[in-house]
Amino acid sequence: MEEHFFQCPYCWENISMLIDISQEKQSYIEDCEVCCNPIQLNISTENSEISSFEAQNIEQ
Image 1 (cartoon, rainbow, N blue to C red):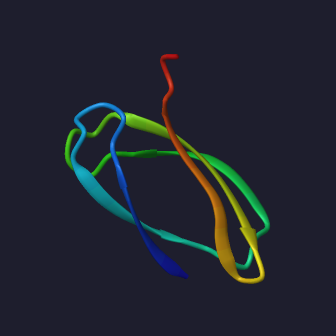
Image 2: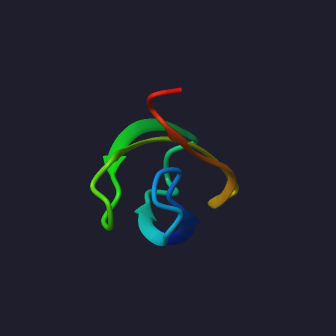
Image 3: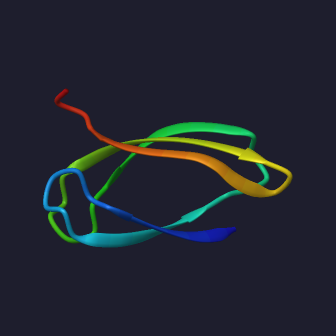
């Protein structure tokens, strides 16, 4: 697991999440720990490092 910091697409607060870097591609929804809105996360890893991280408002 690796901690990753990013900005919430709703409230713009900096938050962090633990990312399972053993999975090459991940896509899931998790609520913001500040404003509780659902965030669509799309994550790719390569060589046990995060190579791509995208946090989107699911209403787009």
